[in-house]
Length: 297
Image 1 (cartoon, rainbow, N blue to C red):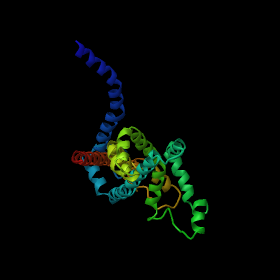
Image 2: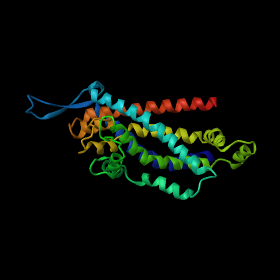
Image 3: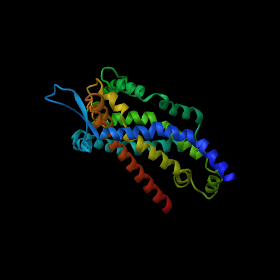
Image 4: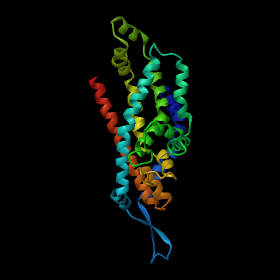
């Protein structure tokens, strides 16, 4: 009887979550899969109406065979290799500094570092586009007066420009996660290390970082998933700046262009499913890799 009541209570409490999860996740994904299996074709010589026909995996082969779509994954690879280490190391370093005994005005710096995350991504991108634009940006003018010339919209500068915007948005947010994890560490462990003669650097790297490993893994996993969804920042850089960022620069932008500029919803759905599968695969790899390292440790 008690077990039945517990089961009913769990079902009542979990029911709203599963309803929302089904409506917001399962049904849209299922619809995208269904949409990816069809394509629209015009009858006659292009003068007739369009009809939706079953195409099987043709949209998937078309996306994989498109050089622009494949190059988008190359851009994501470079972005991840550049952005993720900088974010993890930077956020962790800032959190360790705030957690150290030498830190002053902790609350002020927590708020100051977190504030950029409160700015919506599209607004942040617009701000940085202004700061990147020659003849408008005081930052570019200051760099040029110092003899530093750098085109933020060039093929070589586009990726660092996007990485910089993402770091500005997310560094403080992840720093707060790491700092909260550091605050949860039992202080007696740190005091014992100090008594044993461990210095501040040894305590930070040898004790604090291993103890918050779960938080580091969580941030790394979410960052990988978020990086694969890169869209807003390069889209803003693409609009009217003469940037090297094209309309198909990332897989998300490729799907957006296919759907809303070419009206090819089947191709857009197939590209989205392929991106989702890539994200799931990378998430599995990250969790398995970090899990094995944790067992060895």
